[in-house]
Image (cartoon, rainbow, N blue to C red; front, side, top):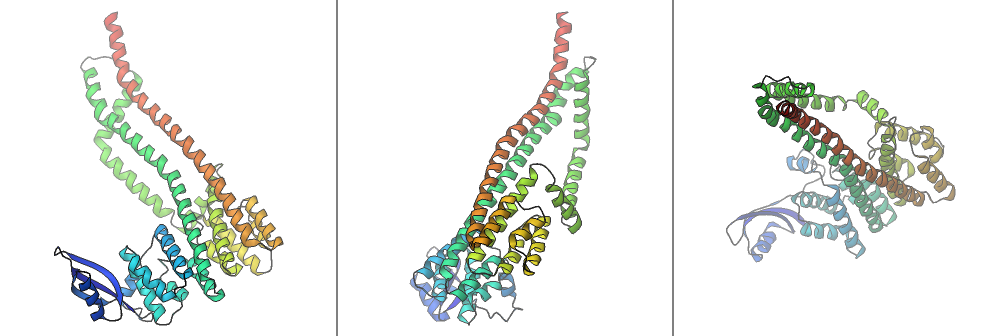
Length: 408
């Protein structure tokens, strides 16, 4: 069966698009008519893997599938294979039940490649933007060992855990930033809009204003006159900083700094160590060689210094050094992780101990994130509230002085 992309008119006269499968165009048109659709255009979207110059093939290989969608797709694939369906039948079923156009396109292309004789791992390897390296390596090991369904179950668990961890990290970062911008916006509105209207009354009284009021008035005048330029400067500054730290040396310096700041060091260590341990666990458990697993794990880590330490450890393991000892050389991986890896090597249960190490590291990370969010939010509110209070005092203090003069 081949994959076909179609355009058709529904009963309401609206044009609908989609992807379906069939043996030939006539069959697809007949099926569309049976569904109450009037086919306008039906064309095959299958491609030969060797035809890399085909424009559509290049475009489909740039498609990015979200982690959450990929975990659902993987779980469905594992269930269908476990029920006794072949790879081709499984992919055909996934094409029909998938709702996203991107996923349909990628799975249709992969099914076409499998039909032409490519293995599932080789077909997936042509879509690096859709499937991470751990996915291809694990599936390749599952195909060779004949345990593809169980490997896919492990992959689905891994992707779900990765998505959950990513959401927790995002929450820890986004909440304080959102709170800061809301409070900053309130502060700017007070200074730019409210302060000039109220303070203008004091200028007609020829009254000596308090120092705090004078400072706020000057700040208000500055923002009114040059606020646009300040905003543009801040925007350019942020873009320049982001560009700077994308370069290799500045990024290495920044990531090294992260590992020297108290509190931040533990957070960065836990996040990257959990990712590494979870990746190693799924790959070793799937039968992927340890060196290939360690090299693939480098890609899931974000901190450049930790990546470099893992790369050095991989080279040492290739020379015969134990994994635990190699990881401990850099001094940047958590001692608990190193200890559990060494224990797993000595007991012959490396995959199991890596899984337990990942769970322990993730639990510690979640605890730290919870503490950070619970403390940082109130601290941010108190700080910004203090600034707002200063602005309000700057407005009210002349009123108090005026009231004292009247009473006197």
